[in-house]
Length: 112
Length: 115
Image (cartoon, rainbow over all chains, first blue to last red; front, side):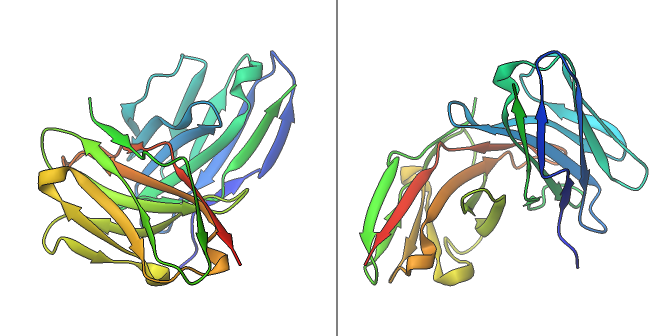
């Protein structure tokens, strides 16, 4: 069974631009969560989608948004990029309920 | 709010020596507990998890962890480390409620292996 895939793997943007990251979960998994990893703040939860609905949200500004499609694939969007948004963005998927989350390789975003 | 503490930022161990990485959590009830490993530039790989039952959990790559409710701890152990174990290790907890898929992570422990 294929793992969680994320595209693109690397991205360079400039301040003020917007970016969209994509995540394809493991087949059969309906929950997708997003995390931001930075050296200063560590791993922080962004949000979680289940059956196309945002079910949980972390403490990030409204510039960070996401969505989930009917095939469980998810996208994350960051608008008006700031230098501090430079990070590794990790996507994780799990089945219904309180299941184990499996992580993708991440998208490394650099904001210049 | 739940929190996870990994008191050791960096640990250096000789190849073949035993290893113990510490993890303490703060939460009113017993959460779900996980250990993940991250190699440089990579995502997180699940090593093992504890939901309930036997408090000694076996994972992949020869790792095990023991849940101690009285100490709110979930320490990771390996009897003999290999050079390939050099990586960053994260302890994480999740609320044991349906519909709450949020993981709270510790700050990580970087493991260095010396020959």
